[in-house]
Image (cartoon, rainbow, N blue to C red; front, side, top):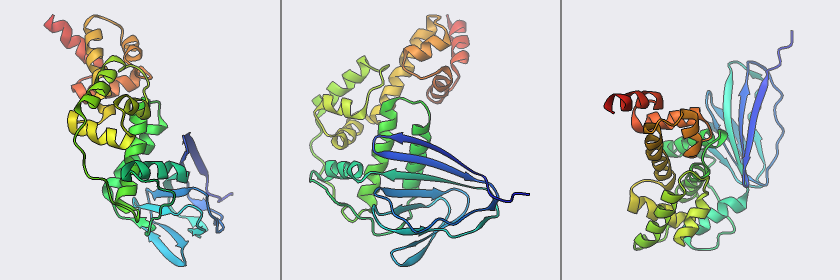
Length: 281
């Protein structure tokens, strides 16, 4: 009887970023050799602890804690030869240029190197953002929401845990520029807009745009776009348009995705909304 563990990998890519989910059944495994990556490597074990031999020291990584391996640095992963219970882990490889671009926007300086002094990061909020990033980018979703999930995570990773964490002072809020971006989102709510595109409308870097938009509007750009989509969906539903057509017309990838966000923001499903609207009118 073959006692080898079964390993399942799901992988997907964004610009300069590789995301992976590994699932292991119980069984025997072959330890990985010492190696390095040209990218920064981040990971979370969801079910049990992990281990690394890194920078001359053995590191214990508790479950649901984030680990960060410096780009180009050799490391030796867990050398276990048998998995006693099923485990899952999420991985992320980031090309340095992607992370440097985020850091440069925050500091308003050209960043060409970046270091993380600790392998294990103890930060529950950052873990939440990491898990959300995986969930958001793995499924069909509006590009603005995906861009925000990636950019927000990388910005927090840099500002809270890199050796260079200083931020520029908060500048006067560019209300007119944010209003231009807001009007653009109002007019193009159903389109698959990127964060870079809407930031350019405001004439700001992505970092300054996200900070300013949230301060002026009170929510992130993608939350604002999603609310506009649901607002328009209610209008179309009240006119008797079929659910599947409403979902597509307001910019959702499918009816299931539309129904999920509709219930989150309205409190009832689109089908229940139609029924209630029928009673009112």
